[in-house]
Amino acid sequence: MIVNSVWAAAPVVAMGLSFAAGLALATQLGRVSHGPWHAQRLGLARALRRSARAWVLARCRVPAVLLADALADAASVDADGFALVDLRLVGARLIGVEPAASNGPPAKPRGLAALVERVVGEAALDLGGRIILPRFVDAHAHPLKSNLIARTPNPTHSPNGALTCEVRDHAHWLGTAERAANALARRLDFALGCALHHGTKAMRAHLDGLQDLEPELGALVWAEFDGARARWLSRGLELQGVANLYLPAYAPADARAQARTRAHVAAAACRAGAVLGAYCPFEQTEPALLALWLDALFAHAQAQPRAPPTGAAMAAGAAPAERELDVDLHIDEHADPSYASLALPALCAALERARARGYGGHVLLGHCTALCLRLPGASASDDRARQELIERMATLGPALTVVANPLTNCALQDRQGTATPVKAVEPRLGPRTPVWRGLTALQELRAAGVRVAAASDNVRDWWFAYGDYDMLEVTSQSVRLAHLDSAGVASASHDGGAPPRPADWLALAGLWPARAICAEGGAGELLLGEPLDAIAFDARSLSELLARPQSDRAVFVRGKLLDGALPRYEELDEMNALVEKQQGAHAV
Image (cartoon, rainbow, N blue to C red; front, side):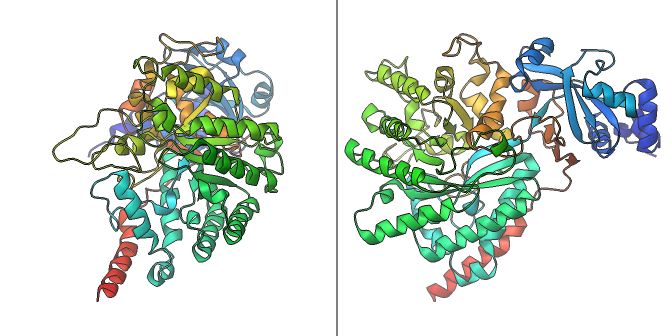
């Protein structure tokens, strides 16, 4: 007989006791032994189901950046920036966070936690210093076209190839076979299922198809967004939508185009969770035209009645005023090294004018890869201008956020086979290894006081052939590629505060984007008084966390352990086959 060593090493769970008896024994012993991770996950899941029982999740590591200053000061904070804390719960509801002793029994409860203990008694589960994070927030994604790489491949993997694929694949979205198979909804559900499995709590999706201003396609996209938002909110994932247009379309010349633009904006304004978006031109544009288009975008955003947010976002005053829409742009996603190529100066000027008119919406700037070229230290003539631009962005306050997309942009930027208008590398024969990372200036922006975030962007489509909506992977690549783990060694923040600690950067996928998109329900935080919404990892340091994929992470949604497997790729085969048949019929 082979004994499973995992169970054998976890005495309270493995001795054949019911969990109630196990908890009673744990109360007598003072704590549950911190055994192998599988047993810890099961013990945690069962403890959360005890609706009337007070207990302690002892010795958890939480990024100190998430804690109130007084608590962070009192807790033991390690070199990575993790605080060692005890989480006090009643059933699945988090009622207190307190400094933990590095060894020995959990700290004595205070306040409400002490009252609960006197009433119902208390058990403890020792997490052994493992890391707990709030569930993730993904502030920039394209789930409607995810997982289409098999049917519409991009052989060059270049931006130019992706633009061609985009047009070719959109032609299928209104096809009879695709609509009969409910393909758009199924793709969206597949993507959101992956995101939820990996621990995402909120996602902002760019709603591909709306930018074409084709009424039938627009109606289909909005219908699928509305349905998915309702379905997945009930499962614990908030979906937001960005209604994109190509930036010039916000200031069209003819009356018919103006009417289409107004209808596009109105469709976003009448929906909770929807914001306005724009694709800025790749090519260098006359400043006067950029000013015209950006002013029109912010005027549309300010003039529309915004569907009011609900829940925690409204209660906290985190959402913008009632009569305005937030704005989300794709901007400066190219590799032109000249300062004159940047659209960001025009964006700053337009936002300053909008603020002067009373616009207070949140603005997200996606990509900004060109900003990172010729920063201080490269001996370029416009270094000082770029640093001044970053400082100007900081003056626009916390309602401005820059979102890096490390997976997609490191795959796209400096890619051979790219040519104008994307402006990166001219096509040429022979091997060519890329020479720069497709990342924005995360360290410089954060040091200046600009809020930053990281996001998934494209997943298994013609822009990026890989990915799975795993925000731990996104964060891990951000830390490695942007050298964020040493960002605080020789720097301090712009306001003279403490330099960032390595674990602070985990907020790239949590607290910072949650505030940027006004996510509801305490996203990005461990919210007191609410069921535990968190991810527990079998890792005790940043190195352990980022060294492995953490496929055995424990995701807790509204106090319950998320069960089940990732969606299977075979689920997508039927949709790809339908398109192949349709293409074959057209060929005949």
